[in-house]
Every structure is written in C-alpha cells, then in structure tokens.
Length: 566
Image (cartoon, rainbow, N blue to C red; front, side, top):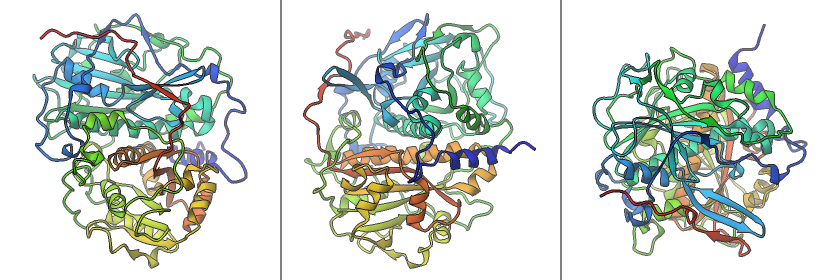
C-alpha cells in the first residue's frame, strides 16, 4: 500500500532533520558563480514600470496598528507601486570586493529568494486588467495575460469581485533556488519564505491604509491555473514554480473571501519563463514528492477564523484586546517614531551580534506581545488558527534571569505545550510582564547561550544575540488533519519571523532567521519525547555588528526616473 500524504510529510520532515552527527542531505560543493539567477524574467511580456514613491511617504511606524490612523490611498498605479516597493522590491545593493548582491524588502533564506510574485488587477487605474509578474530588479509589471476574462469564482468560496478596483497577489516558489544550496531541506525554507512574504505584504498594505488577507482553501490546481503556472509550454526547460498562496489586497476588503475572475478560453498569454540555472548539478526528488503531498485539494472547507475553537482541543479563553500599535514606544528619539517606509526598507538580517549588548525588558516584552495572534496587524492577514508557539531564550535581557521562557499563542497551545514539555508543570509566570502576556519561565540556565550556539548549527549568532527563539508547531494534530497543513505551519512560522524582524528594527535592534538547527537535539533540550510538537524555525535578536568592508549602494540607481501623468 502506498503511503498516505500525511505519512509522506512525516517521513520528509524526519528525513530532513539536521542531527548533531550529520546534516540533512545537500550538495557537497557550491559554486557561487553558478548560483541560480535570483531574477526571473518573462521574455516577451510587455513591462509596465512602477513609480518609486516610498521616499516621500512619512507615515510613522507606530501608526500602522492604530485603526483609522492612516488614510487609505486610492487604488491606482502609484499605490500599487508603493505596495510592491515596500514588500518585494530591492532595498539596497551590497558589494564586497568583486561580489555584488541585492537585498529586498522581503527576507529570504540565504538571500536566494525562491518566492515569485504575481499581481492580478481588475479596474485599477494605470494598470491593465489581467495577470502580471512582478519584476523586482526593474520594479515593474510584466503582463502575462490581459483581459479575456469572464466573471467566475472558485466553487468553494462563492463570492466574486464587484465593480470596484480589485487586487490580488499570488505567491509561488522556485524550489530549485533553495535546493541549489540547501538540498532536501529546501522545501521547508520555501514555505518559511512564503510566510515572510505574507507579513511583508501586510505591513506594506498598512502603510497605504489598506488591508491584506490570505484567501483560504484555494485548491493548488486552481491557483496554478490562475497564475499560469500549469502552462508547460510557457516554461519549456525553465524551472517550474510551485503555487503557494493567494492574497487579496485593498482599502476595504469584503467580509468574505473573494476570488479573481477566472480566465476565459480566449485569453491571450504572453511571455516565456527564463532559465535560471543552465547546468544544475544535483536533483532532490523528495522535494517534488513532499510538494505534491502537501498541495491543497479541491473540496476542502476553508479554515476556521483565528481564535475559534478546535473540535479536539480545549476551549480557548477569550483573547485580550489588541495593543494599539506595533510598538508602544513612541518618543521622538525612538526607532518606532521613524517613517514606516524607512524602517521597512532598512530591515536587514544581522550577520554578527555584539555579545556584550543587552536588551531592555520593556523592549523584550513589546516584541513578545507583537507575536500574539490578536485581531490586529499583521495577524488579520492570516486565516488559520494559531498552531505555532514560542520558546524564548533570554541571554542578556535586563531584569530577566537567563533561561528559557514559553509563550503559548493560544489557550489550546498552552495546554499542548504543558503536555509535551516535560517541565510543563513547573512554569513560573513572569510577573514583570504585562498581565495579558502569557510569558512563563520554563527553566533558568545561565549557560543556555552556549548551548543555543551548538544547537543552531554551531553559529555564533545563536549565542551572541540578546535573545533567541524556537518556534514549535502543533505538528501531529495538524498533519493528521490534512497534509497541506504542513505548508501552513511553516508559513505561520515565517510570518512570526517577519514580525520579529520588524519589531526588532522598531526597538533599534536587529534580527536574523536561522533555518539551520539540530532538530531533535532542540527537542531533547526542551524535554520533547514525541512529535506532538516539532521545532520549525529559529530566530535571534541582538545589537548588530556592521562589517565595514561591505559597501552599500541605492537599490534603483540603475533605473531611469519614472514620470507619471498628473
């Protein structure tokens, strides 16, 4: 009998764990001169350049989470340009010696950027109706399919767009970009990146006074057809893209999810996908296997809203009201008083931390508070219940004893963590935290920083940070309910990572995501004996040490200035 999709997922997850004795299967050598092209082109698709306007937008970061504080922009070519400039565009070029590379608003594992972005526009002034591929190097839209649409909706959703301007963003993954460096573990990183992308888009939408919301329950085959990813002749020898997510964006989204119009038979498609790697050296069939096993099938009901009870979990208690803003620190010299565009585009992944730096307890608690899945930014974009929870390792947080602290993100999660973590009955509440923050001390350990360096694949950023994080997912229950939930767990972990990135910047610190850790050794540290919970991501926050040998150049000096008609 063939294994079920859930069994394939569990086998993949176990197979791709890093162990202290060995790493998951990956390439033995890397030739950086042969890295896959990080910029996909659709050759033959006409390009519409987008304006670069973020420098002129002064919305404070602290205003983003306050309802009604940011007046909504009209939906047009300028606002679409700002949306993409703050979510997926280039933010800088870096150079050291002969090596030169681009940074983007959305972070990526190894800066490899597997995520491709598509825009579906309907009735948007200055943007042709149809499907566009976003080109970050050009900051433009390559038209893939224009007009030729008929009003139709996904059968499971039952809603459709009206006459108002409508926008959707589709995400896909070029899995080879990650597999080239990381081998079999690459599928995990593609999903983490997709979660980061959701967060990047949601924060960008907030700068415009807009909303962004993942459309739940879209069958993978339907999304592939909508984004043109099932058109084999359009790819030829080029690397295929795996459909991931569809996100609706706009000033006032309807209460129910809305699908874009479906393509008619007369739709004229344009463009040929560019080849990213002419001479791939390795193949990892298990990535295609787990991708197929985790695709969203047709006929599955959309997820219940965040916070609604599970049929098998304890009833969660009501969540406290959301905090009014991403950071409650708003003095004129606070980083949170910066323009949101400056903070978002200034986000970087730290490469080194100052091992002497400390983090004020209030900043630590604000960062922890932002991870709670309440109704506000960015959690209103995520349609699934919270199934990923946080263990925070405080190395040098003022007023906190070094050790491990648990932050369950739901009442059901608290119950699960208490069952799974062997020391669950000994948790001590952190009395200095705000009353609505369920942060509890799991164990004090003055030597924990050194252990985290070892467990994070011997990386110094695991120990030199002010604090580190393990993200634990309710693994067995989710995957047993449907193999496609494996993607959602990883995406949720990536979304939490994006919050950590930007909240760290808002406090004047810096974060970095860590996909390399020794899975089961982390489980052993936490006393996990089974797969009820599994670690999916590590993250660290500290004071960065900047390498003076690396120079920084502006992102779009290579592009001529675009003048739009008044």
